[in-house]
Length: 251
Image 1 (cartoon, helix red, strand yellow):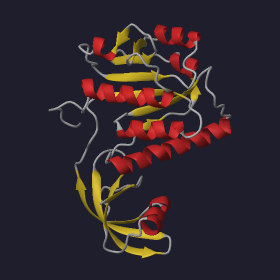
Image 2: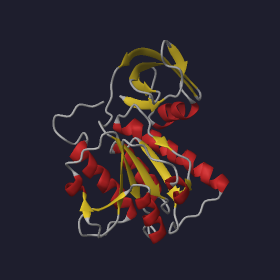
Image 3: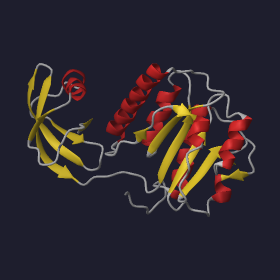
Image 4: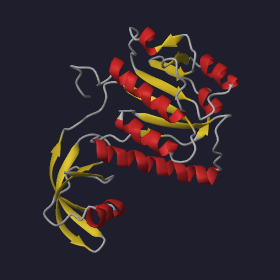
């Protein structure tokens, strides 16, 4: 069944009109009709089976039939701290990171970021990235929408204290450590993964990050592009500690 993000009170609701964007997608893009079933989720866990009752111009009214305790969240929480990327790279990174189970995305500006966004434009881009994350959840089956933080300067973000239960990692070519070398040290709480922009992190930023508790690691001998590095690391983390491992249950 087609899945739709519906940030409305769904509990104890028997009938509702879909939000405008979801209604437009259901009726005009997917060409759904009265009697078709679909899945609704509000981003906080679980999902609802619904059936289209009627379609009136731009409005789609559905009957909410049942709630399902369905989840496909990773057993480990990973926050991706991503240096601002140019063009559509940021969209792709957010989309694929959601598919790979990331729980939070923190876009940051760094010294070597190619893109420069002013405050108003920055707010619009963040809203766009949140929509990208929602669409990725609709596609991949997730019922919890990852947070997408407001864009901020990397150094300012690093000044924020990290929790004791957080493992902090950053990708730096040529580093002494690899994920394999630290694999026996399973994270107790969550992971924060820092990825630089196209030009990498500046030396001052690397030092600041290390002072903030980030451990430099490498992924093999090759230098990966920014849009490759974070996704490869997320997949490796899921393989070591997450739901890519056999026998682990979803939470």
